[in-house]
Amino acid sequence: MFNKGNNQPPQNTYTFSQEITEEGLYQDLAVLAHDSLQGRETGTIGEEKAARFLAKRYKEMGLKAVGDDNSYFQYYDLVQQSVDEIRYELRTSDSDSVVDMSIHNSSEGGNFVTLFGGSDPISGEVVFAGAGVVNEEEGINQFPEDVSGKWLLVMYDQDHTNMRYLQSVLGPEQAIGAIIVVGTDTEDFEQEVESRKGSFGQGGGLSLKYRQTDSGGASSAFNRPIQSLQLKC
Image 1: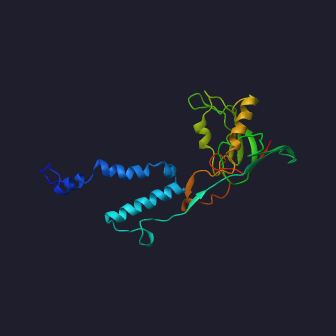
Image 2: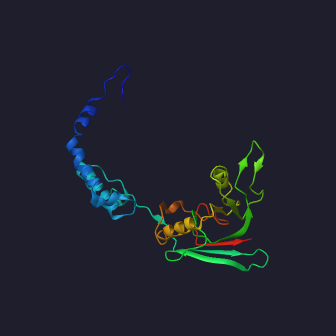
Image 3: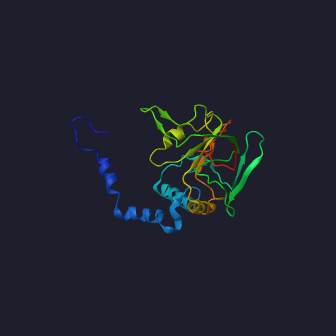
């Protein structure tokens, strides 16, 4: 704290700053940046090594342990989702007969590619949303008025598709997902299918367990990983 009219910092600030040396910083940073810690990603052995090193340094400096069990650590549970395969079914809306079925996993290629999604099976009617054009000034909105519980089929156009609006109508009590037709080049599609095979069975990003909630009802396929999709047209 500075006193009014006194621009000089307290003496203990000078004392503390003198203890920070290039050699001292290097000794700690060389350990934390070492290849043996493998980047210190959350949930890895490298991160655990880094945490234990810091705890050791805190103890050496005489810092009081105020963490769980009188340690320097605070424990919490993390959740990591993974998907082994995604099943796609296309059914008729009148007789519910299967028109097309495919599975995408580490060895098989599906007839669709999932960009975003989650762990819930999702089923719904497919409705056409054109090129996903929304222009309020011109009074244009190609999205159906009622999208609740439906799949939106969008013919993607880089210059005209309103992806922000599309995302805004996906979620609970809204559209459950979007089928985006990016193009008609089958070779490009097959390459995309192959490139995504390696992601199956691999864990995604970590999240705090206590923040996980049961959303109930419809689950947006745009926001959660998917195991099963059923389309009706």
